[in-house]
Length: 173
Figure 1 (cartoon, rainbow, N blue to C red):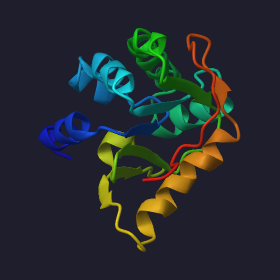
Figure 2 (cartoon, rainbow, N blue to C red):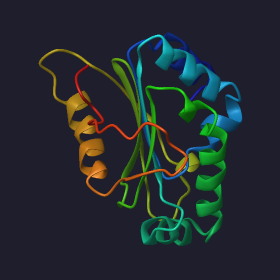
Figure 3 (tube, rainbow, N blue to C red):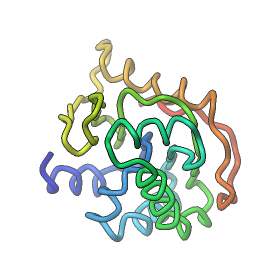
Figure 4 (cartoon, helix red, strand yellow):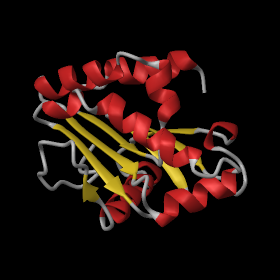
């Protein structure tokens, strides 16, 4: 997926930024200003929801082993969480941890969703990324967004979050 597309989707999002990943560290490494951008978007009224894999969960350790990197996936999740810490001080930026099996990483930017299907034994960066747009009456966008609702069943509020309000990933386009 071209870096320019990620940058464009991040820059253009005004209402929703939702990220469901185990770590998603590449996104913060390649966009070092992203935590500040997310805080600015939240201050302007956008809903920012990030679900990271709980580094102490069995699912993160299992996925790390499947990718051949063992505990390094948990370390990557911890780094992402640390990068996000300043943004979580902003009302409207929600960071939560989950301990669910992810078959896809999901990145929503308003009416665009990027889906990264996880292939057994391959790191997410080696797997394809699918780009879908919300179209009224179409099913694909909403179908992938419901995955976040299921992941929320096992979520925990990250200890560095100030905002613990409950909300559903994928609420409205």
